[in-house]
Image (cartoon, rainbow, N blue to C red; front, side, top):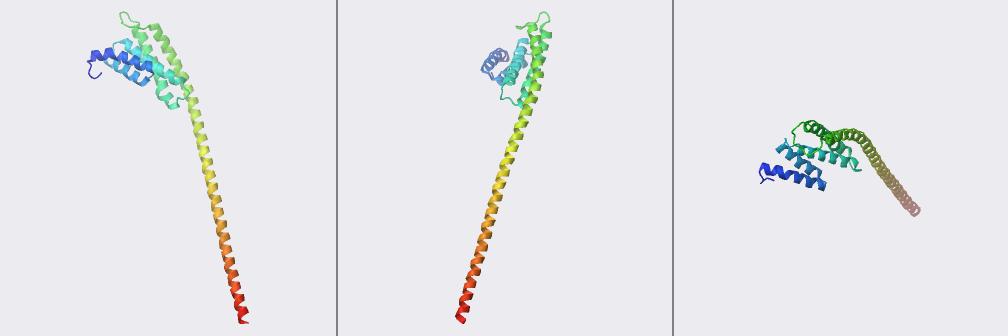
Length: 193
């Protein structure tokens, strides 16, 4: 693309966008479509493509079980809102006479309504996912505290065992020492008599 002239780039970017789109590489498809829109903002079909990509990416992430609340906040909801805004604009602009386009303005209106509804339902789903993530974090923290408490209990037990053995050995040592001293004292006293 760097070697192409701007007019060649505008003709290549829709094909590149479609290839990325079909491969499921949403960010690459969005970037290529956005680049095409920037180079040729008067081509409504490029805007339509960009809106479709935003909607599809948001839709796929919305239905994925592994989507996080952060992805809902940063990709899904803004994707639906952006698509709805563009579809609504295309419905208005595309309905004017002598406007060259390859999409249905009625379809744009339906897509805008659908995207707005999906954005609202995604917000409630994001809240559910956020609550689930918070619950998971609380469970992880609770498990971590249990592990720490168990480790502390083991440490205390080891200290108690050490102290008991130390005290026992100290007392045994003193007892042996006293016993030995007493035995020597008895030998001396038996020898002096």
